[in-house]
Image 1 (cartoon, helix red, strand yellow):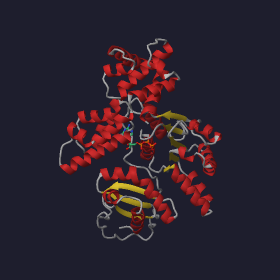
Image 2 (cartoon, protein in one colour):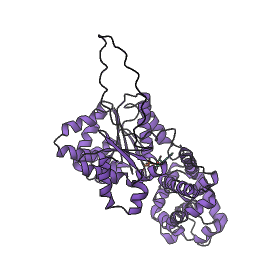
Image 3 (cartoon, protein in one colour):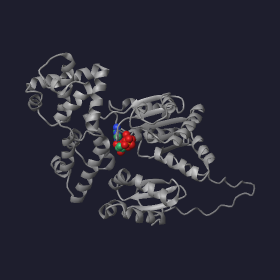
Image 4 (spheres, protein in one colour):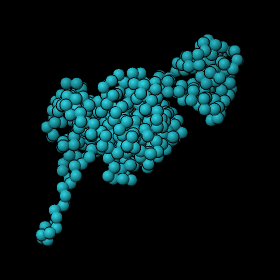
Length: 446
Ligand SMILES: Nc1ncnc2c1ncn2[C@@H]1O[C@H](COP(=O)(O)OP(=O)(O)OP(=O)(O)O)[C@@H](O)[C@H]1O
């Protein structure tokens, strides 16, 4: 076992439960080299879980142990050195042939090869983001600079960012693409300040062809980092090097982000990534299941897509749990098996959104009084919000049309049906209405 990994595990022992440690971290094999630490998971489920739940903690611990920001690469496999074919017997070389140049030091892109455009499922919620990322990848530094992808957690921003980086490298293998999370940028800068090596830090970040920084909301309130990033941004922008950023909300809404930085971020293209609709969620699930070699029927995918609306990461987590349990018990993944295995998880998602919660959220959103929303008054300023609330209740809860009608002051089920149809139609033709719908779904599903 790598000595560094052993020390990291010893430290983590004090923080994690024995069960978590033995289930997820002990089965990993490790190899460290000059580029960082490589961890090998025995299967894709372990890999996904480690990446989602433990990776940031592992990275922080490694930084504590070594005093450097280390790249942790995760893959399925084993740390045993690969069998290398025996080299052929040396052939006598004519004296005048020059020795081959020593290999250039490898550049650490930090890109996840699994996140590509091929593995990204397109739907209405993300098609603009995907198209923009593809444009940037095929025409770096010129199409949109910077490209900023923003939206809630687990909706595919990081995936698209890596996909753009991977495609840039596919078109131009020599292209230096550097991906890092904003915490890593901050960590590197603190380390450079400590080691008085800021010149090297500046050179490192300004010498890339494309700089990809994830979750820049993390820069908020960190003035020195913002200052440094501002200059890096300017240098890259001026020499037409591509910048791709992600943020968990529209950057202008991030408090404690300097106005001059906010203004720079708006120079290129900012695209919102919205929560996927039902059909896209089901398609993503089927695609993920296929990639992981898990046999999932359409009815199971539809069950999960219907009940888990929060984000794709939660959907994927549910799929991983199902796959692991089915594997363990040697059972096929039927809808009954899925209902039984994920009972608690599905209940949590069902509880999260209730009709009263929707009514209150919609009333607050449109700034009308809750009692007016539930009243019989038909003025337009109340009718639309009421229809919106009814339609959201149908979309986000398991209640029937009559039950929803009852919850809205004893209305008939045909009124609810009419509301759902009206809102659906309006969302197709009226941008404002569609934005309201998406924003409310975001608020309600966290
Ligand atoms: N449209 C999609 N097609 C395929 N996979 C997707 C899609 N959207 C999201 N995913 C998957 O969902 C998981 C979470 O996505 P990702 O990490 O890109 O989210 P994010 O928006 O960057 O979230 P955060 O802001 O929390 O970092 C990833 O495994 C990603 O592959």
